[in-house]
Length: 420
Image (cartoon, rainbow, N blue to C red; front, side):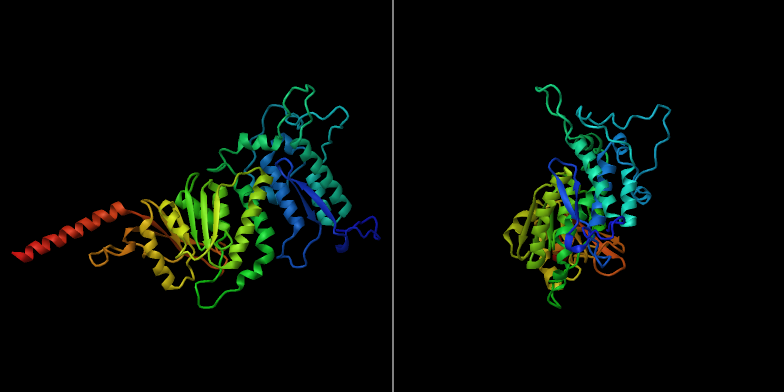
């Protein structure tokens, strides 16, 4: 940014660290953003981060009348996120202040300026003073909704935060957990940008030709797994080789499930702990709830907590794309403890899809699985630019017992026939 009206103004240069704040939906939730753009467009840009979060707050936390206080959202944002508008109503347009508590007598009623358009203009022109002035007004309006004036009656209860009131009344139908997808992804991205992003270089350090190779499953992949496995409130997700914890925090926030992750590599395990702490902070700022998530830095094969939780797990995730075969083989006996209907999601199959159970392999450990192959696409994983397959292994002991009984009866008949 710069001051177009004063070439001598140095307050927007790097050394001055120009900043602005953004009010988040929950009470006492505000964050400071440095108004500097990175030289590399692929690096974290705090201005773009502020802009994206602001648009999500306005689009998802406000009533139509309250949105009118801020102006119009950018066309690109609307085309990506907002459904087609409803047909025009014959009733007169509501006053945008109807849903907003009245200001104090000595407060002026905010004017209906298109503040979001002014913000866009400031960014486009790199106009620092206009950007700061517009953000001051936007934050004032957000505080105006978050902290309504106290009622005249000193015995009356304070009016609630309008943003939090809106989500409790309107989010129930947006997803199984009641959190709109764009809010969920925004919180996940904010968390990642502040914890994993600055340390991404550490994740490329690994031992060659070993199972300790790092690769991330992206939010789109996690969303598919959540949908296909039926994770929900009360479920338990176990991630064997949980990396920086991306899948755990997203799945728990999306569904309300509890989650457990074990990671042997110290670098990703440390970032996972940092990411979980940041996610809890972010959820409070956005007025969301994160369920219990437990992280352990340990060997998945020898950790007692893994053995304790696997029998209770509803979904087990194993990103075994680069696991050595010896590790995949060592994991197989652990699946014998899984309960009926539990699902193992893996990048390499523990049992080939459509594999027939025969008399020769009926005693194999993984014969209890019914396997389905799924496809992932470009952008679903951090390695490579193409797609691939992953596998859902559903425990079906009832079906397995029927097949096994048939083979045992056949063996018994053969033995009796041989004795005649």
